[in-house]
Length: 596
Image (tube, rainbow, N blue to C red; front, side, top):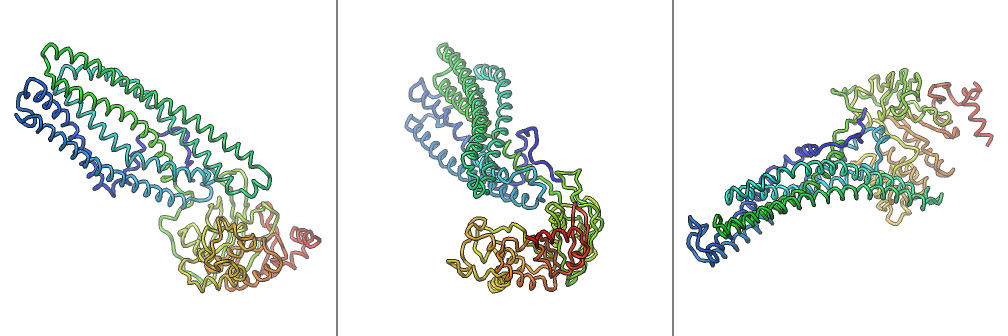
C-alpha cells in the first residue's frame, strides 16, 4: 500500500539530510564554495587586525609589539592594505555567491524532477488521499524554498557561523577576560533561543500545509470551471478559497511573530552582552590594561560576532521552514507505489492475439475494504474475441479494466493474459499490450498531431493521419486553422466532446496493441460521427482481443459475446439474441432503451 504522504507530526530539521544525494553529484562545486567561503571569512577576520594596527600606528602611541601586520610602515600602507583586503573580499564573495546559487538552482531542479517522476509511478489510489493541487504546491513552493536555502541561506549561515566562531576566537586572543564574560552571558541566553526555534519549526510546517490546501482547492476548481460557472458558484468558490488563504495567512502570521520574537531575542541578547562587555573594556583602557587599538579591534570583532549571531537567527528560521518543505517533498520522493514490478519480471511467449482469463477475481478498493466491488468473477476471453460488458452503473465493469491495467491489485483470484499471471509481468510490458479509449478522453495542451502520436511516439506523420482517418477525426482536424499542427487548448477546450473522443480513439488505434479496451468510446458522438467511428473501430478491433464497456446496447450488437454484470458478479453471458430470449437483466435493459 502507498504510504500516507501527509503525516500527523512534523519532521525535524534533520530531514534536510535527505537532500545529500542531490548534492553529491556537485560535490566539487560545493567544495569550491566552501573554500571561497573560508577565504572570505578569513579575510573579514583580518580587517580588525589591520584597523588595530592603523589606530595604534597612526592615532595611538605606536605600533604594537611585534610590529603588526605591516611592521613599522606608516598609515598610508595600512590604508592600502585595507583596500586590498576589501577588493579581495569582494571578488571572493561574488565567486561564492555565483557558485552556491548555481548549486541551489541545480539541486532544486533535480529534486523537482525526481519527485515528479516518482509521483508519475504511483497508482491511482495514491491520489485518493492526496490532491493533485497539493502535489503541485510541493513541486513549486517547497522546491523554491529549498532552492533559496541551499543556494543562499546555507551559505550565509556558514559564513555567519565562521564569522561568529572566528570572531569569538579573536576576542579571546585580544582579551581573555572580556571573552570569558561574553561566553558566560551567551550560555545563559542560549536556552530560550533553542526553545523558540522549536516552535518556529512546527509553525513552518503548518504554514506550508495551509498553502498546499489552498493550492489544492484552486487546482480542483480551475479544472471544473464550466461546472462552477454553470451553477453560478463563482462567489462561493471565491469565498472558499479566501477562507483557506486566510487560514494560511493566520498561520504565517503566527510563524512570523515567533520568528520575529526569536530574532529580537537573539539580537537584544547579543548586543546587550557586547555593550556590557565593551563598557568593561573601556574601563580597562582607562586603567592602561588595554591599548586603544586592541579595544578598537575588540569592538570590530564584537560587531562581527553580533552580526553573525543576528544572521544565524534569520538563517535558522529559514532552515526551519526548509526542513518542513524538505520533509514534505521527501515524503513524496520516498512514497512506495502500491503497484510495483515483480522482483524478476517474466516475459512469456508473445502470441499474435491476447487471451484473457479472470479466475475467481475479487476486488475491494483500499478506500472501501469492506465492499466487494467484484465478487468471484470468472471469465475467459479467447484470443481475438470481441466481448461487451454491460450492466447498471456501478456494477463493476470499469473495475475490470482497472484490474487489467493493474491500477489496482486483485484482492483474491488472478488475471492471466496468455496463461501468465499479470502480476508476474512488468507494468511497462503489460500496459504496452493494452490500448484504451476512456469514457472521458484526455487531451493534452499540444497539437492534434502530438496528441494522437501520444499513443506511439515513434509513429510517422502519415501513420498518425492514417489513425485519424480511421477514427473519423481527419475531417475536423483538417478544418482547424493549422490542421494537424493546431493547438487544441488545455484539456482540449477548443474541441467538442465528440471530437475529443475521436482524438482518443485515433490515439488507441495508432498504438496498435494486442488488447483494446473501449470504455463508452462512442458515447459523445452524434449519429453520423458514430457510424464513421464504428467503422474505424471495427478495423481497429480486427485481429485484436477487444473488451467494450457500453451502456447503449445498440452499439454492441456486432460483438461475439455480451457479459452482463450486476453487483460485482457475472449474471448473464451470451450473444445479444440469446440474452434477449432469456428475459433477464439484459432483456430488461434492452427493452427500456429501445422503448425510448
